[in-house]
Every structure is written in structure tokens, then in C-alpha cells.
Image 1 (cartoon, rainbow, N blue to C red):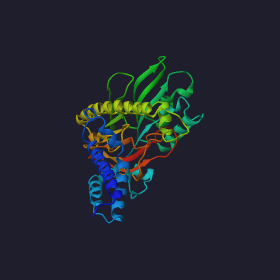
Image 2: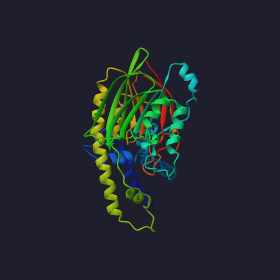
Image 3: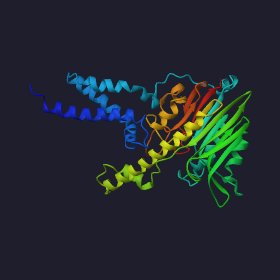
Image 4: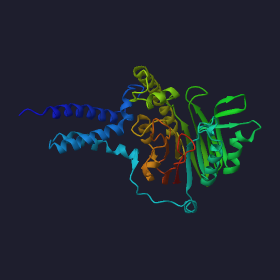
Length: 370
């Protein structure tokens, strides 16, 4: 008996998204420097998984055994979903109790220059960030997109304010300085003594970077890495293009806009692949247990994540709960900020703090040294 047309059509579509899901798995293992387009499938993993599960339901309702194919492939890579969503089983931890247990509070936060250019159209964003940090009092905090100034106006002296507020030692590396007074870069603050520090600029000054900071905690030394990997660098018109897709009332050249988006993605994918290898090799040579914080600008199904998670533990997967998205901007709304740590270190009480202080949410956890 001839199969209904609807079955044949849906089976063809099912095969297409099934292959796409398999490619999303491969994206974690093949460098974008070799096959950049494969990273697009990794980026779409969550959507592809949902579509495949919809096909599972469709075939079950049709009483057709074809559901087994999508079900099998979906289960094969189901572990990836836990990099994006964690069931809520973790206990709430009290800061005072954790201090008494000798644990350190670690935080990572892309502060977007403390809203220097007033993206939020508010005069109090900077003061709200400082109030938040004062209440959190992390033992170690890694800032990306850091800004401070030597000018006389107290508003810009972010480093001075933070040193006093957090009673911290600092490791700051500038990637750009304007007028010899306004400094942009990356920074790590620690309540414990810093005994060594080093910076690695991936290509040239003014670009992306990582720093590592050796921190003395009692008789132990830990090496804290702080990194900001290559961003996609979408422009305002790119965001507008994405927002207006499917809106018939807005005229735009979708071919030209789409090619521009792809070019930006390709450039970012390839650069991150090179950067993450340099970061990985440097961490591999560390004589001390590692904590890695940063804005990776990449998602859990990505090659970037796989390279780093292979040797380290992801604090979110250890004790986080709910959807882990850390980017609060319009696109992409994914988890791209991370705290990783050495397998000898234990972590507890991971949090994504949903405070609208930047286009990234701050993240934190407690760590217990070996």
C-alpha cells in the first residue's frame, strides 16, 4: 500500500533535521578553523533537539516506528542539554555558613564598561553595580570589559572605588588607553594576596586577552584565569535586521543582511578556535589548581566549551539550576559566561544573578580548595 504523501514529506524533513542534529554534535569536536560552518549547527543545537523531539511525537501519534531514529539520536547527545539547563535540585547556601567552612566566593562579571556610554539611559547604573558588588563581597572576582580612568572626576575612578570597597589586591591589564588616562581592559580582584601575574594578548594590544593570577590562600596557591574571547561584534544594524526578520512592514535586503551576519559569525568562530587553544595550552602548564572565569562568547555545545571542559569542571553543571543563560542582550540569548575549575576543587551554590546591570548577568559560586 502506498504511503500517504504527508508521511513521505515529513520523513524527508525528519531526515534533514536528524542530520543537522548529528552535525551539531560534531561541532564540539571539529575546530571552526577547519570547518567554520559546522559551528552554526552547534549554535542551533537546542532548536534542533526540540524539532527532533516533535518528530518523535508526530511518528508515535501516526503509529509509525520511524520515531525510533530521532529518539535514538536525541538520547545519544542528551548530555549536552545539561550545559544549558539544570534541574533544580541544589540547596540554597548561606554566605556566612560558607565562609565558616573555609570556602571562597568566586564571581565572573562582564560589566560592559560600567555603562560608560549610558546604554541603559540611566544615571545610576554604575552606582547600582557598586552597590551589588558591595552586598555580594566576592573573595575573587573577574571582570571583563573593565573600565577605569585616572581623571580627577571621581565618577570614573572605578579601580580606586573597587579596591576600597572590596579590600582587594588587583591584577588589571589594559588593552586600550585613550588620552593616557582612560583605560579599557580586564581585571581580577582578590581579597587574598596576589603573588604572581601574567597577561597574554591573543594577537595585538587592543584586542582580546586572558590574564592569570596566582593567589595565596593560606598555605595553598591557586591560579585564576580571566578571559574575554572573541565576540561576534554585531553592529546596531545587525540587531535591527535580526529583529525585523519576518516583519513584512519593514523593507530590508535579507540576502545582504544574512551574508553580513554569516561573515561576522565566521570571523568570530575561527578567531575563538585559535584563542581557546592558546588558553588551553597555557592552563595545561599550570603548576597550581586552576579556576577559569570569563566571557567565552560561545555556547555549551561549541568547540570552545568542549576544549576547556575536557580538563575542567563546569561550576554550573556541578551545582547550578534552571536555564543558565548569561547574556541578557537581544541576540544571542545564551549561556556564554562561565566559571570552570580544576577537578581537584569542589564547587557549590552556583548562581546566575538576574540583575539588569549590564548586557551580561553576573555569575558566582563557592569553591572548596583541595
